[in-house]
Length: 121
Image (cartoon, rainbow, N blue to C red; front, side, top):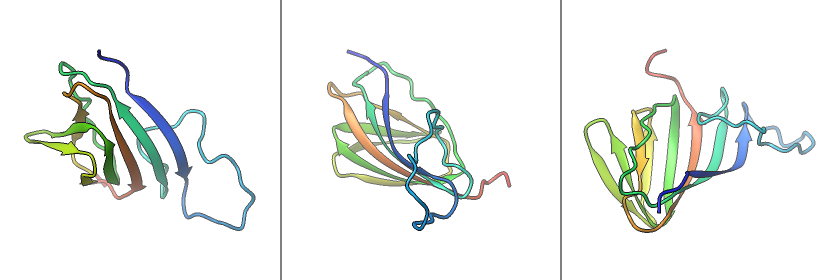
């Protein structure tokens, strides 16, 4: 059964971390897909099983580390796609990309995004 993508925002850092300042919840109430300028984002995304879903293709000015924690999901590019299974890792560098779970079970993917220079800069 198809459902909505669920995102768990674990951490967001704007700029260089300063461990000497008091703790404040690092995730704003309205987090965005890309990391803040000079910063990072750490999140887990659950992609529901949906053989008919069209991937949301997007491009961010970031270096993305992606690790499939469970299930399987396709990493979709403009002209290619790769099936990723539990334990697979993808390093994504500013390309147009999206995700499609065509299996019968949800997939969990961990993402760490690091702000990077844009190809348009």
